[in-house]
Image (tube, protein in one colour):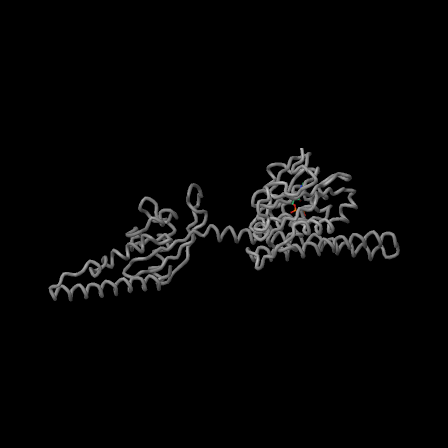
Length: 397
Ligand code: ADP
């Protein structure tokens, strides 16, 4: 809260006190007993105390000697005041503002962070006049965490871009050196093409991710046919499946519907199927199944591939996290596929679940709320395995 607001509250409270006091005084003078609702409110000092105590900010007033003369509970929670003593940095800032006469910002983050105390605390210390200063502290942990995430993200993006750009440069030099050898030129040319494709994919996925994280809620939801989403996603993955010799087994159409953005859902499902293909041995099979489970529609992608160790299962949804960076790079992965899946599902009010066992395989399940329209029409459709003809296992092993 800034000083102006404090002044406004104080002035308001003062005015209220004066008005009520004056009315009360008049009534007293007239000898009429004041009705209860007209009785003067609490004294201004009391009102100010209440405002002070209930503030979300940690507030502490220090005197010229650096002693705490007034503080609220929040100031203790934020570690600004401990056992009646101010944080040494706050006390020093108090002295400083008395001399300078201006407000300063001071970092009061705990030096040894533990317990309930927030990780980051930022305070503004301002002079109050007459040798008093006021510390106004806020919990800034979330802002600091977001800033760290942003910095990491920028560093990761730069690194991810640098690798293929560097490779293209080196390969171009190799092409120039091998100008007289058509075989070599073709070999390096193919590699340049691969790196350019990787760059293109990375940029496309970065744009998709930034759009998804920018708008947490989807602007307009349409009724989407789940069978069409599956058909389209599988069509996109056909080439990769064929070149890896992987058979995709798919269950029968269900007629299920969800409310959402069809393109995004196709992207999410294709990412899961592409991964299932990329992290499976050649000639393995991948299954895609759909079903209704209560108020949810579930689309499961099951592979019999390398699986994911329990300690990595949460992390695979983080941007740029890869269990095996070399393998991901070799398969042309950007490290963003599952982050996109997670955001698409979150934007649809759904979630993605993972079951996996190293050496056995993985099942990624997209869970979406069933369409409100189709839910009304479905009437008393029984839960689970709705019109599902192929009985595919949801989990491997
Ligand atoms: P990438 O482009 O690297 O595949 P993703 O975000 O799609 O990025 O996946 C992150 C990581 O999760 C992958 O690098 C891989 O280690 C792991 N992973 C994803 N899907 C599977 C799967 N079906 N089987 C095994 N590991 C997987």
